[in-house]
Length: 311
Figure 1 (spheres, rainbow, N blue to C red):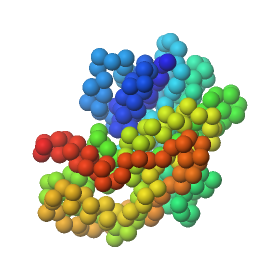
Figure 2: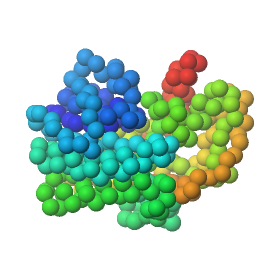
Figure 3: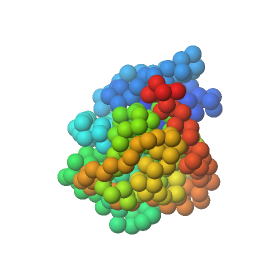
């Protein structure tokens, strides 16, 4: 069995590639390295893995058979997609089109990495897959949100018109080793600041909520989904909700830090709440997260200590 992972040098893509190798798959990783990092997959050298440097917004030519395609290529943090907004829109549209075309040509199963951001700043809580969302298409975050919404529509069109075996996962906040220290998301920012005893920056008053899933749980859910017969979107995430301030306080305590929390204005269209309803994942996939937040944060602490040269 042979699989293609686009965005393989990214945080989730690298864990997914390793997971597939552990299960006997031959894996082709593809990344243009705009936000990916070769060091995330260096440890896969010598296994049945090859990394191809390629921008999926250009035609994808891959020799040989393919059984599975996981489309993860995209900037995924606000600091990234605000820096490269046009590339973000292109990878969600042109990149998804090219990856689906390859799936059609190879008769491969295709899994789209969508996101909880398709729900925008939600008016329904927790978020179920039948909720259509509350997205500002012309705001700065719209380049990511609408790219993913378009990619979902394109994926369903290829399923309906061409019969491609497609799957759509809506990924909620995920964390763990190989996150970029400076990617701007809460967990890397809080750990890097706390470990350096710097002020920990919370946007708004910190009452906005997030639900955090450890990366190994997520990857297990991805594989269960592509192995299933479910065509419509499935939320994968941890339903345990906490405030951003609670997260900051937990990381400061875990790091034994002298940091204090400081606040900054909340960015435009930043979601006030984020919590997945995972009823479909439980029912259809027999999946739910198993790594408690305290355990996951301890594992992440060791990674960030090492990454910052503080181990």
